[in-house]
Image 1 (tube, rainbow, N blue to C red):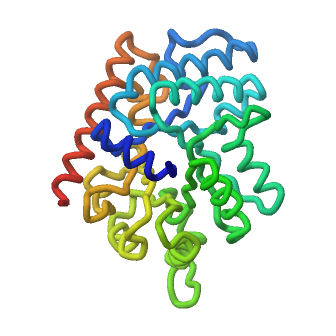
Image 2 (image 1 turned 45 degrees about the horizontal axis):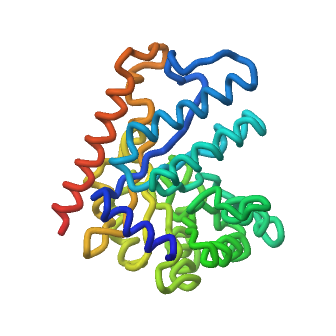
Length: 293
């Protein structure tokens, strides 16, 4: 099966279009997962956090999206922790989107794609899908797209992102329209059957419906709900006519739901708060989608 067929099946089986980000910041780690400051102990804390999040959200989410940077900064031990988390997610039937935002070309892009989709001598997948930066054009996207199709893996191309600085480039006018609309046109040309996904921030709800009209058959990965100010009602505006083809990512507001200030230590019930947040976001999202139908 293609990744997007697997994604649709997963969304249907758990009645959820929620994606939970796994962003294990050492400085935000719950107190009872802290193990010390040695490299081995820091990597163990990352791994334990990832497994805890899977325990708490696996039945509420279609996917998880680990942010590779928080693992890579701990060196090979952190990458090993990431591998173990992705293996456990896959064992539970949860799809894994690697938030890597790769953006290179040629043999380098191919090597990055092989690292994600044909990992090591075993050929096991590290991720079911990845995020890719299209700024260098088709040469940065197609190596992932082509290998992904062979392996049943997916690609989400950065289209309209949720960060404030996105306007610096994405609003630039190219051939009479904003650059992000130009990129949407390229996605439609590269994958007219919709087998390339797009990353579209939920923080600009006025643009979501317009982008859906440009890409009616493509899956959208929508960050920005929660800590960045987007809402599930906003995100649901980009669902297709069947109430699907969207995957809404929530990271900090679920994985660190217990944090109410920068200096707060973790409460004894931090797991309950993470679990409650996942349930609430999933319910709000599915209700918003249903209201759109």
